[in-house]
Amino acid sequence: MPEISRFYGIIVAMFFDDHNPPHFHARYGREKVVIEIESLRILEGNISPRALGLVIEWAAQHKDELLKNWNLAKNNQNPKKIDPLK
Image 1 (tube, rainbow, N blue to C red):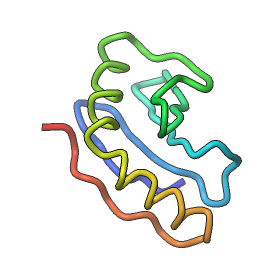
Image 2: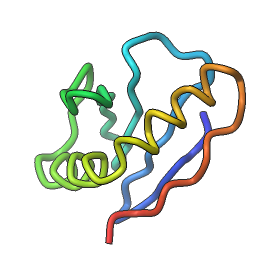
Image 3: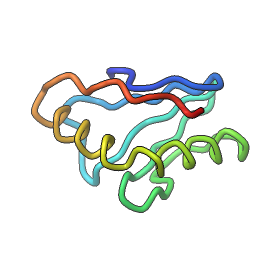
Image 4: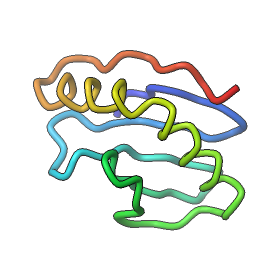
């Protein structure tokens, strides 16, 4: 699972050849969540509200890059790093 970004203790990654809909995984300590890229809704998991807010803010700023990375990963290519939340 390639890491694509890291900020405030949150690790964001994508799996190669993962199932639809396009999504990414975020981990904060022992908490994990899967977020759909288009709607930014939680598909599974749970993380603290503060961490979730940071993840959603970051994802909203980088939707296009996330979708490009999804397509790369679906084709077994390494996704690109995405700038962390500033």
